[in-house]
Length: 236
Image (tube, rainbow, N blue to C red; front, top):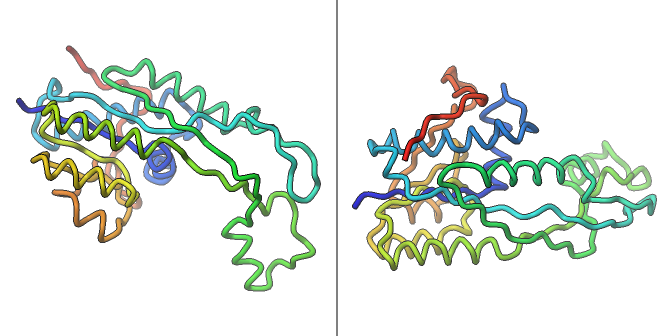
């Protein structure tokens, strides 16, 4: 039995999508969903496996925060549930529910009630390009944490491994939090392939996989990208 399961870190995939598919609208949920499915089929092709070897695509993300919070400087209310990013996430999740052979796994976003300075803001303060008295709302971001996502990933991989449902995993991530799951899968004899979408990865993550394979266009190269409006054919 040759079966491949593909695990996708949603937040990571969306961040890299903007960099590797610069010619596409990152706000087009339908095109993003189709590109994701195309990547899965491209992995099977590169691994010289037929399309019916795809066990399932697992996409891990969090439902958008649906809460009204006061801004840090002005004190005016900010409705996160009404933001453009929240609307996109909801639309993307609805599109993914329609994708063949895909399981959507949603955790939760929790906020600690704290606003923190953005990285660029800190750099500007250190360099003197920005003064403390000139800070505005847009210089801050809410401290958000994903919950349940790592647990769902670990449980899914453990279930597939112990039930011998697959012999190969493709992990689309660059997050070292996947290391325990990758180690468990390899101990069970599963071939683990990492797709960091051409991003550099930590030594600890590289150590616990069996190979690297990125199938998306490499940033700065002339490699052609699959048309986001064309759904790859999948039968079965």
